[in-house]
Length: 397
Ligand SMILES: Cc1cc2nc3c(=O)[nH]c(=O)nc-3n(C[C@H](O)[C@H](O)[C@H](O)COP(=O)(O)OP(=O)(O)OC[C@H]3O[C@@H](n4cnc5c(N)ncnc54)[C@H](O)[C@@H]3O)c2cc1C
Image 1: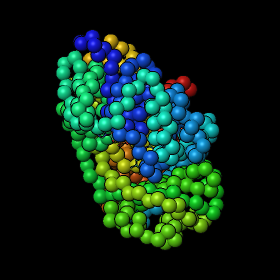
Image 2 (image 1 turned 90 degrees about the vertical axis):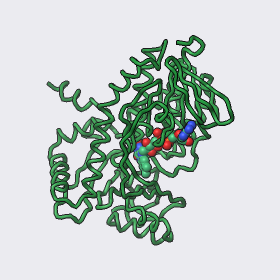
Image 3 (image 1 turned 30 degrees about the horizontal axis):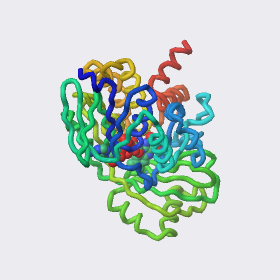
Image 4 (image 1 turned 45 degrees about the vertical axis):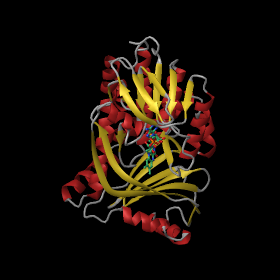
């Protein structure tokens, strides 16, 4: 390969996955060129980040800054709020059941983006070009990106963290399967009269999940998945009317609700890349996998992409974009990504489906989970970190 560029890595995209990848690769000693605009400070979502993801962010020096406006998740509950013939029992997961103080923290995305942006801008190993990549040229021993403004940068490896439409993925010739869902997520934060007790509740409805997640104080974030036209209607309501609708949907579980300013709508879809690396491009985050927000999986999975990629790039330091390194990354990420995308999409489709067998399957699955503590513990451990459910079973034998 061209010795002028042995350790340059181009990271395309300045969403959370791209900034985390840039920091982790730079910490591992690679010269990182990050391409993308200023970080999004207007993202009203929050991300429930599980303890392993937070531990990784801690190694990048950004976890501490997140704690100020974040709240711990000690209990996660699934409530079947459908009016269907077959309904599931309530399933409750307590972090204490698996010896953890909490599962993770609910972090405002704005805080996450701000902390990452600050760390990226201060890192001597990262050259940040605040420009989009306009086109890619893929060679056998290096890859080059033409940036808006005319500069060309090149490296041994390109990390595609450029989101669901991922131009870098397309340049690498990686195909995807995509499914549009007749759903959109209304996102809003709200204050409530009763304390949440660090409990997050995911109500499963016929249009998708309605998920309340704790924030500091008597406040919570909400992801309300409905038909796209309903999301528009809800978002256009007066504060008082929308607050009353949210309270009603939660059966006044947290008392009187007062929504905070700022509502956003996210259309939902699912995209899965056919492979996760090829032609000097490795996919991370939503460039690799997009699915509906059920069970707080998306960014946690994206952070695991970055962890595995950095480990493999480090093992292949002389040429982190070599075919063998990319094949190792693809093989390593495949089981985790397929398991999460498969489970989330199946659950989402079973909510939307009027078919009795789909409802029976969902109800039976949640019923067994609710009644059988060891299985619940297994799922909780797997939810935090893939493989840890299995290893805890074997360590007890
Ligand atoms: C309502 C909702 C709630 C969610 N809640 C959770 C949760 O609780 N927990 C969780 O783990 N996940 C959650 N997720 C998922 C999580 O938000 C996503 O996984 C995450 O935001 C994806 O980040 P990303 O960096 O991969 O992509 P993005 O944030 O989309 O970033 C892509 C970046 O690429 C840039 N880009 C695009 N084209 C180019 C180009 N040509 N050149 C350079 N840059 C380019 C864009 O400008 C952008 O900066 C939720 C998702 C939704 C919709």
